[in-house]
Length: 105
Image (cartoon, rainbow, N blue to C red; front, side):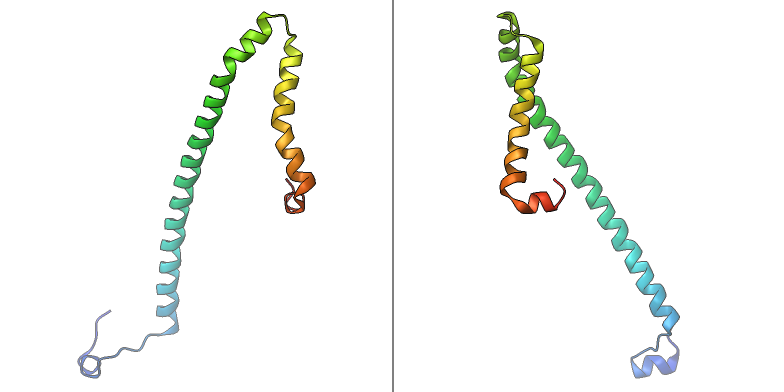
């Protein structure tokens, strides 16, 4: 925006509502793009972290699972053990923390 000679002397400029709306729209668009990029990076990093924890958990239990299967445990029993171990924290959270139930957990 070019200032006229009179505007330069007075050291202020008048903006129309349209100019203000355009500046606000541009700023809003920039912020939306920035926050979307940050959210995307956060999701990727969080996903990698969860994947790593799951891999470590499975790797630690592989030997135990093979040993149980080698001594004639039925595969269904091993599966049931894993399901119970994973469902227990959820069950306790839902029953003893009402905010988890209210959030649909």
